[in-house]
Image 1 (cartoon, rainbow, N blue to C red):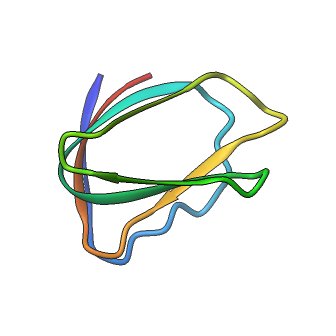
Image 2 (cartoon, rainbow, N blue to C red):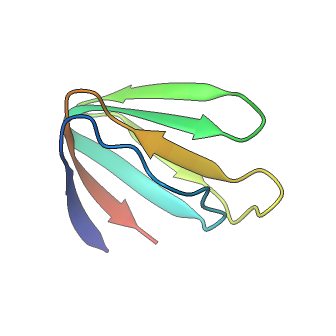
Image 3 (tube, one colour):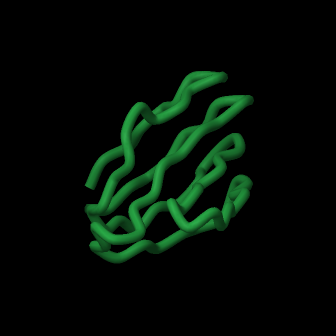
Length: 71
């Protein structure tokens, strides 16, 4: 478990194939899967992604976000 503060303009610099459960506590976050799907999460939204090396994910935020993550 970890709490992460993403600064405005943050873009993850790699594709991640690990599974996570996350809860956006503040701000807004965009999760993108390699297959092209995108999910915009706002405060109070959660997202779960399983281990999947064939369809990894990355994230970005324009406004910043505080996120609670369980790996």
